[in-house]
Image 1 (tube, rainbow, N blue to C red):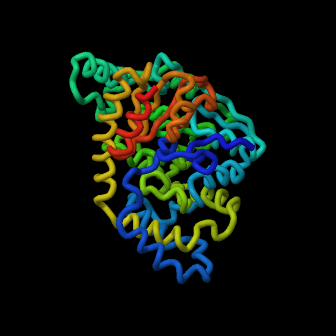
Image 2: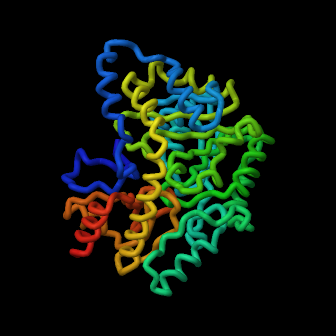
Amino acid sequence: MEFQHGGDIYRNAIEYDFSTNINPLGMPKGCEEAVRKAIPHIGEYPDPQGEILCQAIAHAEGVETHQVLLGNGAAELIYGLCHGVRTKKAVLIAPCFSEYEKAVTAAGGICEFVALDEKDGFRLTKNRNRLMDVENRHAEGKDSVFVSARTPAEDVSEWTEAGHALLSAIKEDTDLVFLCNPNNPTGATIAKELLYPAAEKCEAVGAILCVDECFLPFLEDESRYTMKQELERFPHLLVLRAFTKIYGMPGLRLGYALSANTDLLHQIKVSLPPWNTSVIAQAVGIEALKDTEFIEQTRELIRREKEYLMRELRSGLAEQIYASEANFLFFRSRPYLKERLLEQKVLIRDCSNYRNLSQGYFRIAVRNRKENEELIRRWRKF
């Protein structure tokens, strides 16, 4: 089966990987030492409940410990969810993370897709003020064209046609709705003005609303978008998060789900293999959560380097850049871009295999300055 994600460094001779959206700072301080300390315990089974880690996550996220379920990465929880609730029909937007569709299909279900429109910037909720601000800054010749997601949620006065279509698609025969916030690969956020009605509609028809927030910690104002504090209000709500991206540890495979619905969490858990999170993964997760300054350092780096990349892409490298609030940029450029950069030993994400996208759409991660400069230097060679 063809691998359809970024990060395939094993079959490409590359020096710089911009195809996966991992924290350029790597893991927090102390995590490598946590690995070394955990090695002597490899001869023991891990705690099947991951109790200490669940307590640490609950404290960090402001939820109850029994509302946390661990997974071998968020991907395992996505598959466990689809199998656990015996999904027959799911509603997805397009483009979005492909594993949602694969998990639904693997569970024997079908997917109904709501297509995002390019004229709306591939968004569910309009935020033209932010898009106009980017254009105005660029037109005025200002150095900084980065616009963070600081626009107050109340300024988002209407949904796009896709936003209305999403709510209309949630019907009595819907079992599951997947939303990624910010969305992958576009980086567009979904305002709570749509998330709340979507959650209410799901409650009314008995569907599970799964909001994937794996990229949300990269935002400086994630509190405007997260649904993790709405678990009690919406019993059919499930929030997904992971250590993978924000804590720079994709090789360890560690994610978690949050829900106030203990029956739902049980349905997922019984669909997962036992001891699904290793001794090392649990130890490193506990250690990572202790570094309270790490997230702020990460956000500052992403803000600064995103400014730089936006300037460079706007100076003739990209034909169109879409407003991404995440730690990556989504843009349209020449169809052969990936192949030409591979010749320069740089890997980027070709997004043509996403539903509702075609050739010429790409995604690049925001890395550190040295890596970003090297990407631009090699890109400008052709």
